[in-house]
Length: 298
Image 1 (spheres, rainbow, N blue to C red):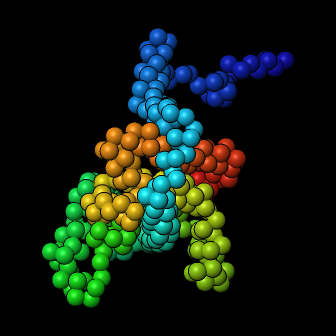
Image 2 (image 1 turned 45 degrees about the vertical axis):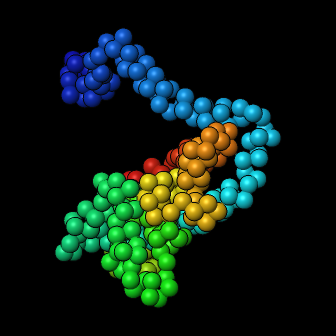
Image 3 (image 1 turned 135 degrees about the horizontal axis):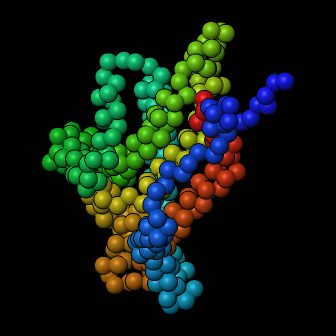
């Protein structure tokens, strides 16, 4: 008569069925302390400033709040901010997709140098980048005499603001897409090319659908930074009221004039744009979680 087989006869399989031991060794009070520190930090440096902005903006009532946006200078600042973002974001979108596609899908000489240059605006102060544009395009700059001779004004005008904004925001799209494209590899594109698809058709039907959610996140972040950029724009704008002041610069002028309600009102608009960006990003992550996970696995 054969002996009964018990689970202990298969120690390896049995071990595989057991839930893995927790790798968290900290005591409960340590984890609670770390969570409390994180919450306090966020409350002091994120939530409290945002709440303060909106409280100060409505300190004298809704009428005073709306009056801050009724001024011609406020209209001009809003319009210039939107125009700047409308130019900078599509430019960075095209550049970011092209750069990420080249870096992730191809091997070429200077590839590492291109990656380093893309990261350059992250390491250079926005004020320094604005100063560089002044040294290049200013009246006393390298190209200044030629621009003056041809009646072209870049510094202290809208073109300089757009150029400075593009410089400080162009890493956002590329840096979001490069790791995503590298993780997806080139197998699907190679299969499409083998089946007779052209390079553009493979990009449009294979690569672009796989990166669409990462691309959308990058555009949202790029747009938020473009609208909120201060340092580089401040250097190249000249602070001409009604002409070269974006929303952040308009906030500074109002605050320096001790018009605190108007300053915080305009600042609340920028804060609201940031919150809307965060909400849209969170909604997309929740709504398309399955598509995001599938895209990451490719």
